[in-house]
Each structure stands twice: as structure tokens, then as C-alpha cells.
Image (cartoon, rainbow, N blue to C red; front, side):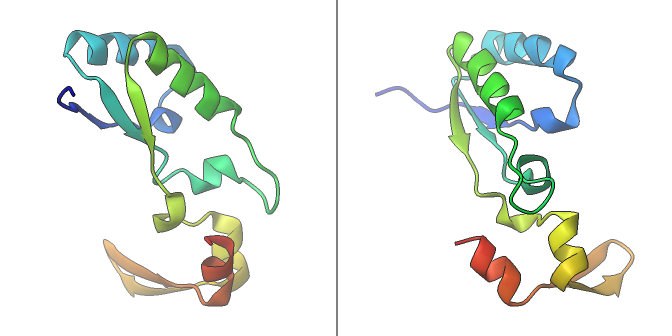
Length: 110
């Protein structure tokens, strides 16, 4: 058994042309694992019942080609704007904003 060594990686925040360089740098640094997608719900489901996994498949394939395994996070920490608009209320101000999203988020994240 080998030591798991890596970091969080958010390819959705970078141009796709950048991903190969990131994968190469992570490989050279000795990373063998990255965690993806925990804040990507809006990228995975941009509109209700419309899913896009193509970008995620590409990122996983690219990383895998460099010997880097992937741990997929559950993206419920960052609900997409369409759920917030439908059900949510923002509370707070400044850098601390809490979202109150009743049943819809609980139902959709199961």
C-alpha cells in the first residue's frame, strides 16, 4: 500500500488548455491522488435535470494518464444558482453568508 499524496484540484476554475500543465506539475511533484468536484454542482447540473459530466470525464482521464487517482467529492456544499433562486434565502453580510435552503436541497442531494 502506498501513501496517498495530493491536493484538492478545481479544473472547472481554469481554462481547459491549462489542465495538461497542471497534471504534469502535480505528477512531477509526486502527487498520486487529487480530490475533485466538491464545489462543482453548478457545473455538473447547470440547469435543473440537465447534467454535464464531459468536463469531469476529461479531467479525470487527463489526471489518470499521469498516474493520478481521483476522489470525487459530493458537491452539496455549493448548490447551483437555480436552486438558490427557487428555494433559498441568503442571510448575513460581508464574507459570511449562510443559505437557508429547505426541502429542495435535502431532496436533491440524496
